[in-house]
Length: 402
Image (cartoon, rainbow, N blue to C red):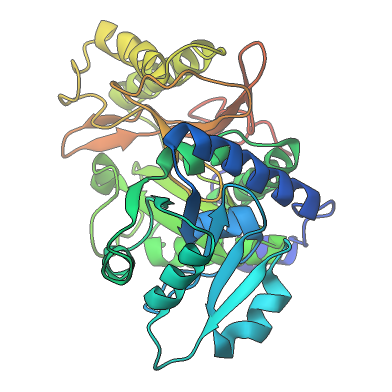
């Protein structure tokens, strides 16, 4: 089989260099436009302010790429005017170096209650109705509720998702880079396979390849599954060793300035059985059918239905029954690897240009093997465009590359 085996980790890593034409970062102007859009969307909720905690949404709006912790770090955005950042005083220097928008900063000391500070900020804005980031930890929600019991609260998903689910050209460029880097890591990983290699060795190589290419912090995740383990969508615990004839399923990704990639390739180490070949071809057609169903205005669930129609015509399913597709066809992606909306029955969100999704209608043959082909697309004015070209064949999984 072409492109599988025949090389070493050392040889492949030595050929990798930082990405030659990195996408530019998100500009201050774009972040300011995001804040303005969020302020406009608040009106539809009847909210007078929005609170966003540390995590992907805080990075989206402000550029501050911090993870949530027990210490409250967040942004309060009034329906008009500049945002206010809530931050521990000892983190002020780091915050000032990270923030990408104009904002007032309200600081709290370690012995102080940050939710009382937050309540005071909201009171100074005359806020009575607050939209809350759906990712806000319950402990933070509870602390805020205790500090300001008079506040009316509502879920800010319509505001946060309403902004984040439509990607700008700058976001698409960052995601394109991340996905191209991951596809290159996939290609190199296939070449180091040999009988007896462990899943741990392959994961380590893919992390090193992502780092060599310039990803934010190596692999953001990496699942390597050999043989029977491929029949479990997220694998089995422990380590496997590669044997002749094993299915190889590798699902991995990285981040570029916070934006995610997530690509899966499935092939075989050796000669595929007729059954595996048939399942792979059906999977390929189901992925293509989902892509072909995409156009603006179509509900997300219709894309899932298109993939399942192909599978059920070939005797898989129905619904989530096995052998067949045990999960949704795809998920939104951006600063979070899984984010709204979703390609699944019941999600009737109309597709809009700029939305980005995975396309991965996996076929599981219980306790034997699984086949998942995963690439990502973005919605255009007329249909969909791939970020990465899908796997062309079972025998030559990276035939599109030299």
